[in-house]
Image (cartoon, rainbow, N blue to C red; front, side, top):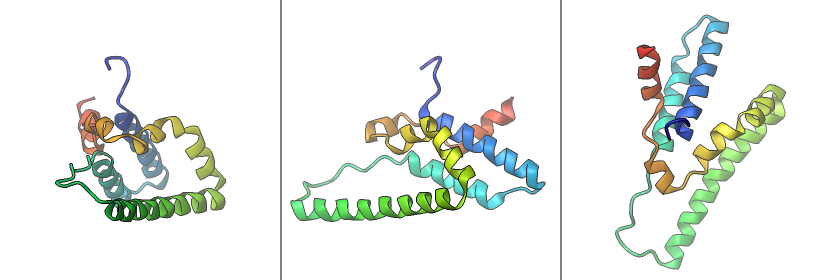
Amino acid sequence: MAGEARPDAQLFQLLSDLLQQVESMSNQEEVELRAKIEALGLEVTKVPQQAPKQLDELEIAAELDRLSARLENVDKMISSAMTSDPEVKSLLSSTADVWMPVITASADERRGFAGTSGDLQEQEKSK
């Protein structure tokens, strides 16, 4: 991947740039937002553990229900934000090519994600 950045690195560079813009516009350090971005970095690089045993159909169905509920909550939050603020809709639409590959990554692709927001902060310091 010499000429192309990893999807997670692109996403966290975008988030870092947006955070810097927010901080410069508000003249305040956004500690809470920075912490949330770092937590997101940890979340997207998680690799599902290998199941120690074979799951039966009921366990698989329960896990799928749990994941579906989480996705439904995320969908509600995104829909609400897009409805209440046209700028959010525009931003999400124009940056989908950056964040979609990260949130739809398979376990194998996540294993390739090494960068988190902490790595980006180190890269910025070295510039």
